[in-house]
Length: 206
Image (cartoon, rainbow, N blue to C red):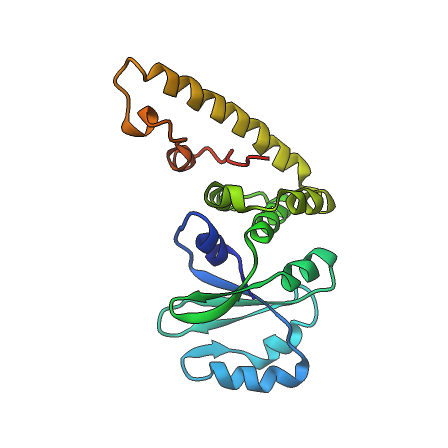
């Protein structure tokens, strides 16, 4: 299952990324076949794969043509990881069939990683997904797992900022009735993308 920044690009606001992240179920008996599949144009170490059954449960393959790194994370028994894996969706990416995590799960996953290792990039990725997928997100599911993952405070903080942003947009739009303003303001279109690009990651309408 594809996860990480490539999936937040799929569901949200694209940005450059230099690696791919996959969560995989990999029995030891399948390791030789995996090594064979990546042989030739990728560097992959069979010993590193076998070591991935111990923490941090990760190995990678490196594309020798482009230096693109593919990180593989072994599926762990943690409840959220199991739930995320079970909810994966089948989509078409660049003409190929792929399994990806849902929009809700990429938001939660990135907020969880931000809790472990604070990163503005993780927050911005999550904000981008919500900005694009706003009305289609399962907010009950998000709140439930945000509580389980101890990231509810972050979501609530974003929610409060979103209310403030919407209030400011309404005031600005009203003032445009008799003044010269940008087209998107005169049409009462909430400027989600301009706000996001300016660095405001508060686009969580919960």
